[in-house]
Length: 77
Image (cartoon, rainbow, N blue to C red; front, side, top):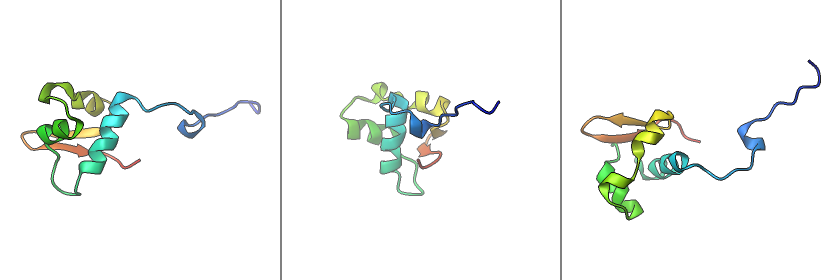
């Protein structure tokens, strides 16, 4: 079909979702080797430990959980 339009994420001007914001903040906090602890992340956002929803970002493939260590960003965007 010669008249099919294709769109990419760059074509769609939309605000970031909460999991994307979480992943972006996590990338800023990551030092390159040490996983970021959930408590440190919550403190940075000024929230309590249970309200940061890191698992939502992990389900979307934006973060990786390292059990008993913390979180790692999966890819820089």
